[in-house]
View 1 (cartoon, rainbow, N blue to C red):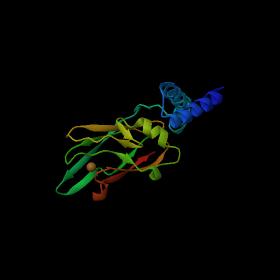
View 2 (view 1 turned 90 degrees about the horizontal axis):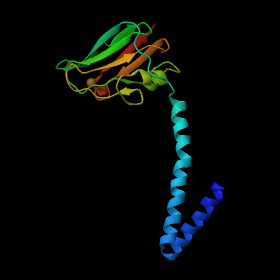
View 3 (view 1 turned 180 degrees about the vertical axis):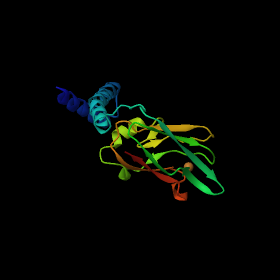
View 4 (view 1 turned 120 degrees about the vertical axis):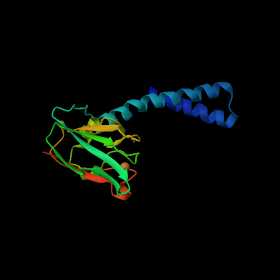
Length: 171
Ligand SMILES: [Cu+2]
């Protein structure tokens, strides 16, 4: 039924194009466009859900602070190597030299960790990346609850070329 209606409307569109587009043809052409969008929307939603169906798991342990610094000695996370127990939080706080963010390398985290990690970044901007933080005192917290043990390579997107990166180890 839907296919038939679409084919019919497509014919009307063709006729309309040939005939210079009268009002009836325009109306018919608008209908299948809306119908196509509605039919495609659920598929797109389903695919998004399948790719990242995790909900944020709050911090259940203690929270470790990592400073984000940019000064005369360079750009860095301090400490750059952080080891926590699963369930702890890591709070990345701007000290100087912003904007900074926290971005995990998709190839540098344990297999199967991405969906939960995306959910556990307090202020996510893009896949495995937090938003940029400009002002001293602003922070991003990453919960390690429900994440697989292993090493997680992270960096600051704007300052990666200057070596601003680190490794989070979850035990
Ligand atoms: Cu930075």
